[in-house]
Image 1 (cartoon, helix red, strand yellow):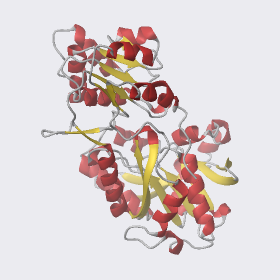
Image 2 (cartoon, one colour; image 1 turned 30 degrees about the horizontal axis):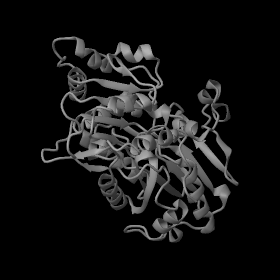
Image 3 (tube, helix red, strand yellow; image 1 turned 180 degrees about the horizontal axis):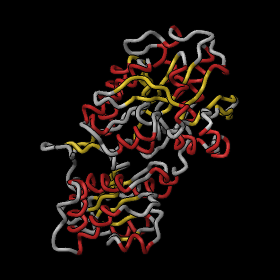
Image 4 (cartoon, one colour; image 1 turned 180 degrees about the vertical axis):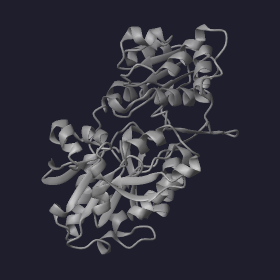
Length: 416
Protein backbone atom coordinates (compact mmCIF):
# COMPACT_ATOMS: atom_id res chain seq x y z
CA UNK A 1 0.00 0.00 0.00
CA UNK A 2 1.33 3.42 -0.90
CA UNK A 3 -0.07 6.70 0.25
CA UNK A 4 -2.34 8.56 -2.12
CA UNK A 5 -1.96 12.13 -3.28
CA UNK A 6 -2.98 14.96 -1.02
CA UNK A 7 -6.04 17.03 -1.98
CA UNK A 8 -3.66 19.93 -2.68
CA UNK A 9 -1.45 17.80 -4.93
CA UNK A 10 -2.40 20.13 -7.82
CA UNK A 11 0.60 22.15 -6.69
CA UNK A 12 2.69 19.55 -8.52
CA UNK A 13 1.03 20.19 -11.88
CA UNK A 14 0.20 23.86 -11.33
CA UNK A 15 3.55 25.06 -9.97
CA UNK A 16 6.40 22.62 -9.44
CA UNK A 17 6.59 20.88 -12.80
CA UNK A 18 6.23 24.11 -14.85
CA UNK A 19 9.00 25.75 -12.82
CA UNK A 20 11.25 22.68 -12.85
CA UNK A 21 11.07 22.73 -16.65
CA UNK A 22 12.47 26.28 -16.77
CA UNK A 23 16.28 26.52 -17.23
CA UNK A 24 16.60 29.43 -14.78
CA UNK A 25 14.79 27.59 -11.92
CA UNK A 26 16.29 25.14 -9.44
CA UNK A 27 14.24 22.78 -7.25
CA UNK A 28 16.91 21.27 -4.97
CA UNK A 29 14.70 19.48 -2.42
CA UNK A 30 14.08 15.90 -3.38
CA UNK A 31 11.94 15.61 -6.50
CA UNK A 32 8.60 17.01 -7.62
CA UNK A 33 6.71 13.78 -6.93
CA UNK A 34 4.18 13.51 -4.14
CA UNK A 35 4.49 9.71 -3.94
CA UNK A 36 6.50 8.29 -1.04
CA UNK A 37 9.72 6.34 -1.48
CA UNK A 38 8.28 3.52 0.59
CA UNK A 39 5.43 1.04 0.61
CA UNK A 40 3.71 2.10 3.81
CA UNK A 41 2.34 -1.29 4.84
CA UNK A 42 5.69 -3.04 4.40
CA UNK A 43 7.63 -0.22 6.08
CA UNK A 44 5.29 -0.24 9.07
CA UNK A 45 5.48 -4.03 9.39
CA UNK A 46 9.28 -3.95 9.25
CA UNK A 47 9.42 -1.25 11.94
CA UNK A 48 7.01 -3.12 14.22
CA UNK A 49 8.79 -6.45 13.75
CA UNK A 50 12.14 -4.87 14.68
CA UNK A 51 11.51 -1.96 17.07
CA UNK A 52 14.34 -0.06 18.72
CA UNK A 53 15.10 -1.38 22.22
CA UNK A 54 11.65 -2.99 22.46
CA UNK A 55 10.25 -6.46 21.75
CA UNK A 56 8.47 -6.92 18.41
CA UNK A 57 4.93 -5.64 18.72
CA UNK A 58 3.63 -9.10 17.86
CA UNK A 59 5.24 -10.26 21.13
CA UNK A 60 3.81 -7.35 23.13
CA UNK A 61 0.11 -7.62 22.29
CA UNK A 62 -2.00 -10.71 22.76
CA UNK A 63 -5.46 -11.94 21.84
CA UNK A 64 -7.96 -10.44 24.27
CA UNK A 65 -5.97 -7.21 24.82
CA UNK A 66 -7.83 -3.98 24.29
CA UNK A 67 -5.77 -1.66 22.10
CA UNK A 68 -6.09 2.12 21.75
CA UNK A 69 -4.44 3.71 18.71
CA UNK A 70 -3.87 7.42 19.18
CA UNK A 71 -2.95 9.69 16.27
CA UNK A 72 -1.02 12.93 16.60
CA UNK A 73 -3.06 15.88 15.38
CA UNK A 74 -2.38 16.83 11.73
CA UNK A 75 -0.49 13.64 10.95
CA UNK A 76 -0.51 13.17 7.15
CA UNK A 77 -2.09 10.20 5.37
CA UNK A 78 -3.92 9.24 8.56
CA UNK A 79 -6.33 6.90 6.78
CA UNK A 80 -3.51 4.81 5.30
CA UNK A 81 -1.66 4.69 8.61
CA UNK A 82 -4.84 3.51 10.33
CA UNK A 83 -5.44 0.77 7.77
CA UNK A 84 -1.83 -0.42 8.00
CA UNK A 85 -1.63 -0.59 11.81
CA UNK A 86 -5.06 -2.25 12.10
CA UNK A 87 -4.08 -4.87 9.49
CA UNK A 88 -0.91 -5.57 11.49
CA UNK A 89 -2.76 -5.92 14.79
CA UNK A 90 -5.32 -8.29 13.26
CA UNK A 91 -2.44 -10.41 11.94
CA UNK A 92 -1.22 -10.82 15.55
CA UNK A 93 -4.60 -12.15 16.70
CA UNK A 94 -6.20 -8.95 18.01
CA UNK A 95 -9.93 -8.77 17.29
CA UNK A 96 -11.15 -5.73 15.40
CA UNK A 97 -13.74 -5.13 18.13
CA UNK A 98 -10.92 -4.77 20.70
CA UNK A 99 -9.29 -1.89 18.79
CA UNK A 100 -10.34 1.74 19.35
CA UNK A 101 -8.94 4.69 17.44
CA UNK A 102 -8.78 7.90 19.51
CA UNK A 103 -8.41 11.18 17.60
CA UNK A 104 -8.89 14.91 18.10
CA UNK A 105 -11.73 16.79 16.47
CA UNK A 106 -9.30 18.27 13.95
CA UNK A 107 -8.12 14.82 12.89
CA UNK A 108 -11.73 13.64 12.67
CA UNK A 109 -12.45 16.49 10.27
CA UNK A 110 -9.45 15.55 8.11
CA UNK A 111 -10.65 11.94 8.07
CA UNK A 112 -14.07 13.05 6.88
CA UNK A 113 -15.96 11.99 10.02
CA UNK A 114 -19.11 14.14 10.24
CA UNK A 115 -19.56 16.14 13.44
CA UNK A 116 -23.14 14.86 13.67
CA UNK A 117 -21.82 11.32 14.31
CA UNK A 118 -20.00 12.13 17.54
CA UNK A 119 -21.18 15.51 18.84
CA UNK A 120 -22.79 15.26 22.28
CA UNK A 121 -25.69 17.32 23.57
CA UNK A 122 -24.88 19.52 26.56
CA UNK A 123 -27.48 17.60 28.56
CA UNK A 124 -25.53 14.36 28.06
CA UNK A 125 -22.30 16.03 29.17
CA UNK A 126 -23.82 17.47 32.32
CA UNK A 127 -25.27 14.07 33.16
CA UNK A 128 -21.75 12.65 33.14
CA UNK A 129 -21.84 10.68 29.90
CA UNK A 130 -18.55 9.99 28.17
CA UNK A 131 -17.91 10.83 24.52
CA UNK A 132 -19.43 8.09 22.35
CA UNK A 133 -17.44 5.39 20.60
CA UNK A 134 -18.72 5.33 17.04
CA UNK A 135 -18.17 3.02 14.08
CA UNK A 136 -16.56 4.37 10.93
CA UNK A 137 -15.50 2.62 7.73
CA UNK A 138 -11.82 2.54 6.75
CA UNK A 139 -11.31 0.64 3.53
CA UNK A 140 -12.87 -2.76 4.09
CA UNK A 141 -12.92 -2.40 7.87
CA UNK A 142 -15.37 -0.82 10.28
CA UNK A 143 -13.40 0.56 13.20
CA UNK A 144 -14.38 1.80 16.66
CA UNK A 145 -13.47 5.50 16.99
CA UNK A 146 -13.71 8.01 19.77
CA UNK A 147 -13.26 11.71 19.02
CA UNK A 148 -11.68 13.31 22.07
CA UNK A 149 -13.67 16.11 23.70
CA UNK A 150 -11.48 18.24 26.01
CA UNK A 151 -14.60 19.72 27.63
CA UNK A 152 -16.03 16.35 28.67
CA UNK A 153 -14.86 15.95 32.29
CA UNK A 154 -16.16 12.39 32.59
CA UNK A 155 -14.10 11.41 29.56
CA UNK A 156 -10.83 12.11 31.42
CA UNK A 157 -8.95 10.13 34.04
CA UNK A 158 -6.65 11.64 36.65
CA UNK A 159 -3.09 10.31 36.41
CA UNK A 160 -0.88 12.47 38.63
CA UNK A 161 -0.04 16.05 39.59
CA UNK A 162 2.69 18.13 37.95
CA UNK A 163 5.44 19.98 39.84
CA UNK A 164 3.14 22.95 40.46
CA UNK A 165 0.37 20.70 41.76
CA UNK A 166 -1.85 20.98 38.66
CA UNK A 167 -3.79 17.78 37.92
CA UNK A 168 -2.69 15.74 34.90
CA UNK A 169 -5.74 14.33 33.09
CA UNK A 170 -5.74 12.13 29.97
CA UNK A 171 -8.53 10.71 27.82
CA UNK A 172 -10.13 7.87 29.78
CA UNK A 173 -10.32 5.47 26.82
CA UNK A 174 -6.53 5.63 26.57
CA UNK A 175 -6.18 5.04 30.30
CA UNK A 176 -8.56 2.05 30.24
CA UNK A 177 -6.86 0.30 27.29
CA UNK A 178 -4.45 -2.58 27.91
CA UNK A 179 -2.13 -1.32 25.15
CA UNK A 180 -1.71 2.27 23.89
CA UNK A 181 -0.06 2.74 20.49
CA UNK A 182 0.77 6.38 19.73
CA UNK A 183 1.54 7.31 16.12
CA UNK A 184 3.45 10.59 15.96
CA UNK A 185 5.34 12.87 13.63
CA UNK A 186 8.55 14.75 14.50
CA UNK A 187 8.80 18.34 13.31
CA UNK A 188 11.99 19.58 11.63
CA UNK A 189 14.03 21.76 13.96
CA UNK A 190 14.94 21.99 17.61
CA UNK A 191 13.39 20.25 20.61
CA UNK A 192 11.25 23.29 21.44
CA UNK A 193 9.50 22.90 18.08
CA UNK A 194 8.26 19.37 18.84
CA UNK A 195 4.72 18.30 19.71
CA UNK A 196 3.86 15.23 21.74
CA UNK A 197 1.36 12.80 20.28
CA UNK A 198 -0.74 12.40 23.44
CA UNK A 199 -0.31 15.36 25.77
CA UNK A 200 -1.79 17.96 26.04
CA UNK A 201 -3.99 17.30 22.95
CA UNK A 202 -5.82 14.45 24.70
CA UNK A 203 -6.25 16.27 27.99
CA UNK A 204 -8.69 18.90 29.29
CA UNK A 205 -9.56 22.37 28.01
CA UNK A 206 -7.75 24.00 30.93
CA UNK A 207 -4.58 22.01 30.21
CA UNK A 208 -4.73 22.94 26.53
CA UNK A 209 -5.12 26.60 27.45
CA UNK A 210 -2.25 26.47 29.92
CA UNK A 211 0.08 24.96 27.31
CA UNK A 212 -1.07 27.39 24.61
CA UNK A 213 -0.15 30.28 26.92
CA UNK A 214 3.25 28.64 27.56
CA UNK A 215 2.73 28.74 31.30
CA UNK A 216 5.92 27.83 33.15
CA UNK A 217 9.25 26.98 31.56
CA UNK A 218 9.85 24.82 28.51
CA UNK A 219 11.49 22.20 30.76
CA UNK A 220 8.53 22.13 33.16
CA UNK A 221 6.09 21.64 30.27
CA UNK A 222 8.06 18.72 28.85
CA UNK A 223 8.48 17.23 32.31
CA UNK A 224 4.69 17.24 32.54
CA UNK A 225 4.39 15.68 29.08
CA UNK A 226 6.77 12.88 30.10
CA UNK A 227 4.86 12.43 33.36
CA UNK A 228 1.57 12.00 31.48
CA UNK A 229 3.05 9.45 29.07
CA UNK A 230 4.76 7.44 31.81
CA UNK A 231 1.68 7.40 34.05
CA UNK A 232 -0.36 6.26 31.06
CA UNK A 233 2.15 3.52 30.31
CA UNK A 234 2.85 4.86 26.82
CA UNK A 235 6.42 3.58 26.62
CA UNK A 236 6.17 2.46 22.98
CA UNK A 237 5.70 4.72 19.96
CA UNK A 238 5.49 4.72 16.17
CA UNK A 239 7.05 7.75 14.49
CA UNK A 240 6.80 8.55 10.80
CA UNK A 241 9.28 10.70 8.90
CA UNK A 242 7.80 12.97 6.25
CA UNK A 243 9.30 15.01 3.44
CA UNK A 244 7.97 17.94 1.39
CA UNK A 245 4.39 17.57 0.24
CA UNK A 246 3.67 15.33 3.25
CA UNK A 247 5.26 12.28 1.63
CA UNK A 248 6.06 9.50 4.09
CA UNK A 249 9.72 8.51 3.77
CA UNK A 250 10.47 6.36 6.83
CA UNK A 251 8.75 4.61 9.74
CA UNK A 252 10.41 4.15 13.14
CA UNK A 253 9.11 2.35 16.21
CA UNK A 254 10.31 1.21 19.59
CA UNK A 255 10.98 2.53 23.07
CA UNK A 256 9.67 6.07 23.04
CA UNK A 257 12.91 7.99 23.63
CA UNK A 258 14.94 5.92 21.17
CA UNK A 259 12.34 5.89 18.37
CA UNK A 260 11.77 9.62 18.79
CA UNK A 261 15.49 10.38 18.63
CA UNK A 262 15.95 8.26 15.50
CA UNK A 263 12.94 9.77 13.76
CA UNK A 264 13.97 13.32 14.70
CA UNK A 265 17.49 12.79 13.38
CA UNK A 266 16.13 11.38 10.11
CA UNK A 267 13.62 14.24 9.84
CA UNK A 268 16.23 16.93 10.36
CA UNK A 269 18.56 15.32 7.85
CA UNK A 270 15.75 15.15 5.30
CA UNK A 271 14.82 18.80 5.76
CA UNK A 272 18.36 20.16 5.96
CA UNK A 273 19.25 22.38 3.02
CA UNK A 274 22.80 23.71 2.65
CA UNK A 275 22.65 27.40 1.85
CA UNK A 276 23.24 27.69 -1.92
CA UNK A 277 24.42 30.74 -3.86
CA UNK A 278 21.87 33.48 -3.08
CA UNK A 279 19.13 33.47 -5.70
CA UNK A 280 17.63 36.33 -7.69
CA UNK A 281 14.08 35.17 -6.93
CA UNK A 282 12.71 32.56 -4.52
CA UNK A 283 9.39 30.73 -4.62
CA UNK A 284 8.57 29.26 -1.18
CA UNK A 285 5.70 26.80 -0.95
CA UNK A 286 3.44 25.83 1.97
CA UNK A 287 1.98 22.42 1.12
CA UNK A 288 0.01 21.46 4.23
CA UNK A 289 -3.70 20.76 4.05
CA UNK A 290 -5.37 24.09 3.14
CA UNK A 291 -7.30 24.25 6.44
CA UNK A 292 -4.07 23.75 8.39
CA UNK A 293 -2.06 26.53 6.76
CA UNK A 294 -1.37 29.50 9.04
CA UNK A 295 0.29 32.89 9.14
CA UNK A 296 2.96 31.38 11.37
CA UNK A 297 3.77 29.14 8.37
CA UNK A 298 3.89 32.26 6.19
CA UNK A 299 6.35 33.92 8.57
CA UNK A 300 8.68 30.92 8.74
CA UNK A 301 8.54 30.41 4.94
CA UNK A 302 9.31 34.08 4.32
CA UNK A 303 12.30 34.02 6.69
CA UNK A 304 13.69 30.85 5.07
CA UNK A 305 13.29 32.35 1.58
CA UNK A 306 15.01 35.57 2.66
CA UNK A 307 18.07 33.59 3.78
CA UNK A 308 18.37 32.09 0.30
CA UNK A 309 17.99 35.22 -1.82
CA UNK A 310 19.99 38.33 -2.52
CA UNK A 311 19.00 41.44 -0.61
CA UNK A 312 16.04 43.21 -2.22
CA UNK A 313 15.27 40.14 -4.41
CA UNK A 314 11.56 39.28 -4.75
CA UNK A 315 10.00 36.44 -2.76
CA UNK A 316 6.85 34.50 -3.67
CA UNK A 317 4.91 32.58 -1.00
CA UNK A 318 2.71 29.96 -2.71
CA UNK A 319 0.02 28.82 -0.28
CA UNK A 320 -3.67 28.14 0.30
CA UNK A 321 -3.96 30.33 3.42
CA UNK A 322 -7.62 31.23 3.86
CA UNK A 323 -7.71 32.97 7.26
CA UNK A 324 -7.13 36.70 7.57
CA UNK A 325 -3.92 37.51 9.47
CA UNK A 326 -3.97 38.13 13.21
CA UNK A 327 -3.40 41.63 14.53
CA UNK A 328 0.34 41.25 15.13
CA UNK A 329 1.04 39.72 11.71
CA UNK A 330 -0.95 42.54 10.12
CA UNK A 331 1.08 45.04 12.12
CA UNK A 332 4.32 43.43 10.94
CA UNK A 333 3.21 43.62 7.30
CA UNK A 334 2.09 47.24 7.64
CA UNK A 335 5.43 48.25 9.19
CA UNK A 336 6.72 48.82 5.65
CA UNK A 337 4.70 52.03 5.58
CA UNK A 338 6.15 53.28 8.87
CA UNK A 339 9.56 54.66 9.82
CA UNK A 340 10.32 52.06 12.49
CA UNK A 341 9.48 48.44 13.29
CA UNK A 342 7.71 48.04 16.62
CA UNK A 343 9.86 46.47 19.32
CA UNK A 344 6.67 44.99 20.81
CA UNK A 345 6.49 42.45 17.99
CA UNK A 346 8.07 39.04 18.52
CA UNK A 347 11.56 38.52 17.10
CA UNK A 348 10.10 36.45 14.27
CA UNK A 349 7.57 39.13 13.32
CA UNK A 350 10.25 41.81 13.54
CA UNK A 351 12.19 39.82 10.95
CA UNK A 352 9.05 39.47 8.82
CA UNK A 353 8.53 43.23 8.99
CA UNK A 354 12.13 43.88 7.98
CA UNK A 355 11.94 41.52 5.00
CA UNK A 356 8.71 43.03 3.68
CA UNK A 357 10.15 46.52 4.19
CA UNK A 358 13.26 45.74 2.12
CA UNK A 359 11.93 43.75 -0.83
CA UNK A 360 8.81 42.89 -2.84
CA UNK A 361 6.82 39.99 -1.40
CA UNK A 362 4.04 38.25 -3.33
CA UNK A 363 1.42 35.91 -1.90
CA UNK A 364 -0.66 33.26 -3.61
CA UNK A 365 -3.44 32.28 -1.19
CA UNK A 366 -7.17 31.62 -0.89
CA UNK A 367 -7.75 35.18 0.35
CA UNK A 368 -9.43 37.93 -1.66
CA UNK A 369 -7.11 40.17 -3.67
CA UNK A 370 -8.09 43.21 -1.62
CA UNK A 371 -7.18 41.50 1.68
CA UNK A 372 -3.71 40.62 0.38
CA UNK A 373 -3.02 44.02 -1.10
CA UNK A 374 -4.15 45.80 2.07
CA UNK A 375 -1.22 44.06 3.77
CA UNK A 376 1.19 45.60 1.28
CA UNK A 377 1.77 42.23 -0.42
CA UNK A 378 1.50 41.50 -4.11
CA UNK A 379 -1.50 39.35 -4.97
CA UNK A 380 -0.55 36.33 -7.10
CA UNK A 381 -2.94 34.11 -9.04
CA UNK A 382 -0.96 31.74 -11.27
CA UNK A 383 2.45 30.39 -12.19
CA UNK A 384 2.44 32.47 -15.37
CA UNK A 385 2.90 35.59 -13.22
CA UNK A 386 5.96 34.01 -11.60
CA UNK A 387 7.41 33.14 -15.00
CA UNK A 388 7.01 36.74 -16.12
CA UNK A 389 8.80 37.97 -12.98
CA UNK A 390 11.59 35.44 -13.54
CA UNK A 391 12.30 36.41 -17.15
CA UNK A 392 14.98 38.91 -16.11
CA UNK A 393 16.60 36.59 -13.55
CA UNK A 394 19.10 33.79 -14.19
CA UNK A 395 19.17 32.14 -10.76
CA UNK A 396 15.70 31.34 -9.39
CA UNK A 397 14.99 28.92 -6.57
CA UNK A 398 12.01 26.86 -5.37
CA UNK A 399 11.88 25.74 -1.73
CA UNK A 400 9.16 23.20 -0.95
CA UNK A 401 7.40 23.56 2.41
CA UNK A 402 9.80 26.38 3.21
CA UNK A 403 8.27 26.86 6.67
CA UNK A 404 9.79 23.50 7.66
CA UNK A 405 13.10 23.67 5.79
CA UNK A 406 16.22 23.96 7.92
CA UNK A 407 18.71 26.28 6.24
CA UNK A 408 22.27 25.35 7.17
CA UNK A 409 25.03 27.94 7.06
CA UNK A 410 28.19 28.75 8.97
CA UNK A 411 26.48 31.14 11.36
CA UNK A 412 23.25 29.17 11.60
CA UNK A 413 21.20 30.21 14.62
CA UNK A 414 17.75 29.31 15.85
CA UNK A 415 15.07 31.92 16.39
CA UNK A 416 13.28 31.89 19.71
